[in-house]
Image 1 (cartoon, helix red, strand yellow):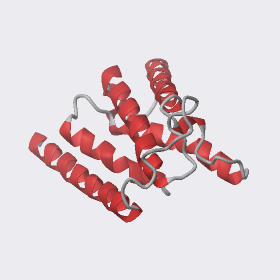
Image 2: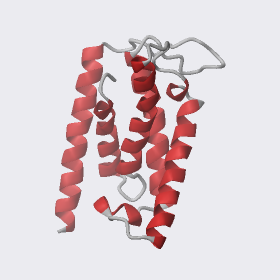
Image 3: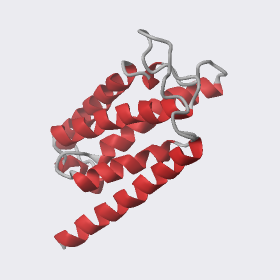
Image 4: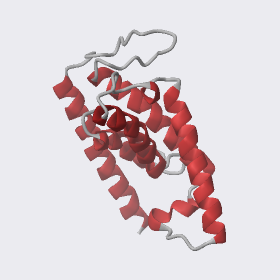
Length: 162
């Protein structure tokens, strides 16, 4: 995706469908963390821009990092005051783990369709069979549609709880 937030729509949809099992915060966080590598590579003219963390080997490692960061933040919150924005301190380890793993893996899938430089199966293969599997316009529209449906779903769920 040319802009990381395009990835967030699926996270909103998953949160709407399975709120007790998926953390949108960890889904979004892992997507940002994965794209830090691409930003660094782009700014330093390194190729491929989408490297290790855009593989099915690297993305789960970044999900693990996200989960560990959450555990560290929760430990810090038990010792010191940390704002509980979006009630992140009430998230279960399961919610954070599922959100981070789904976020990381879907990131690789979406970017594999979008970007020619990704080798998602590296180091086992340099092939990217998903590249341009669907036209980019359709990919972008799909991401926006999923995001809109996800936001509607989250809104409806929250309205039901009031």
